[in-house]
Image 1 (cartoon, one colour):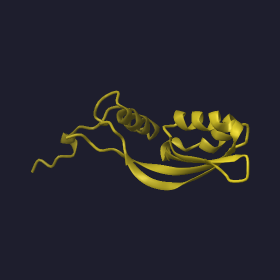
Image 2 (tube, rainbow, N blue to C red; image 1 turned 30 degrees about the horizontal axis):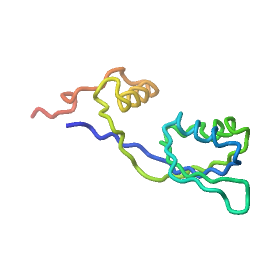
Image 3 (cartoon, rainbow, N blue to C red; image 1 turned 90 degrees about the vertical axis):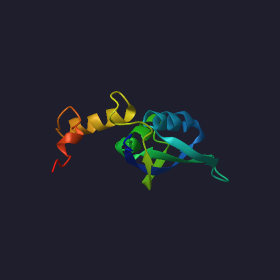
Length: 123
């Protein structure tokens, strides 16, 4: 059976000027973000975007967004929900596998995934 790898997803609310649209969408796309809603703030030239962004992709997001928009975007990140990755971490090369392997490397763990036999009680 495939393994369901879950991750935290942040809700992003960002306010920006109309000249910053490309920077907003580009930064979100690079970090697996998904735009949920976009609208203009009534009576102003500002826009508001709501998006979901995986928490492990959110580190440095504010500074990257400000750099991409020339300091015109003002994001706020809050926990929103848990989501599932649509791939199996046991399949080498899948997105889930790449995330698991990067995490194992960052934590100084072995480069290979442990076998089920390591945890199965044989009594």
